[in-house]
Amino acid sequence: MMTMLKSALKLAAMAVVAFALSGIEAPRAGAEELAKNLFGNEKLPAALPAKSYGFYSKGCFSGGVAIPTDGPTWQAMRLSRNRRWGHPALVSVIERLSRDAAEKDGWPGLLIGDLSQPRGGPMLTGHASHQIGLDADIWLTPMPRRTLTAQEREDISAVSVIKKKGLTVDEKIWTPEHLRLLRRAASYPEVERILVHPGIKKKLCDTVKGDRFWLRKIRPFWGHDYHFHLRIGCQPGSTGCKEQAATAPGDGCDESLAWWFTDEPWRPNQNPDAPKARDVMKMSALPKECRMVLDAPSPESEMAATFKGGGGSNTSITAVIDQADTIVPKTPAEAIGANAYLPADGVAVPLPEQRPQE
Image (tube, rainbow, N blue to C red):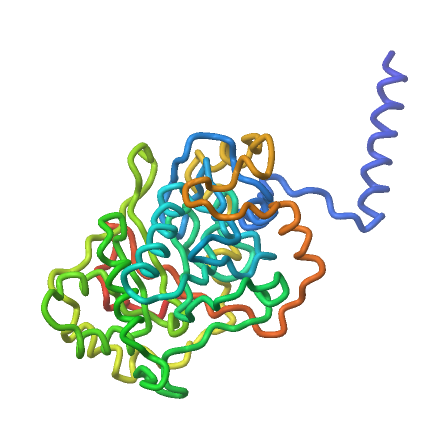
């Protein structure tokens, strides 16, 4: 028996030496995959009740639905990204905004950019926020009268409303309909913040007459010159969702806005090669419920996960995903704004202590 044990130990030792000499690195104890890889590769949502977990820039969500690629008053863009998912409350707000703006404000329809990945979480590229299904990017370019092809949705760029190499709006592009669209979005109680380029905020401050209370929701932030970022609050039932800080009193047309027109906010990043939060974030940094979200089954079918609230056409999600291998955008990826605000127990806004990561 002792001889057999010695032989077994000898063979095991030889196997360890051989493995080491092979050049193959053994798995390190405690090695943990990046959260962005896990969430970024999910194609469908978690078939669980709709709930958001964590904060806008560090979390996930379940029960997500996809906004249909086309509706009477909207079209979804950049389909290959598979980022048209959100909490049902967010998708409902977007569809309502598209209808109200078309019927009452002269805006022909919304071009919808990124919402979230199917189960949220940090993205493979872009966006620090958009992680819990409560954020959406809406283009400031009005929807054309015809239905765009899948290829056009990849290639067409939104038009900036800010002057080239400037900080104020281009009066040749900006219209009263832009103002009415933003006012309409801010009028909804579900909407807590709308992020825009500082030049857009200044234009609103200079021109809005009468009721200005809604301007407090319009917050200046880097980028956001060709789209606005719409954010709703934590929804009922999402007990694990972390609220953001309340907006400051007043309309925001004060020294906090003036700061954006000094040199300080626009100084070059002194460390542009520093890793972004999404590139180092591991599962241990996310709420524990996010593991449950990852492990949950998907809906029974692609169509079952498409929002049914607004009568849009339900393009196959599988078809959308398949396009990712064949569509190559001709223009650079959209400039994505970072999450704008810290949790309620964080630093006050709107004066960041340092330039946020994109």
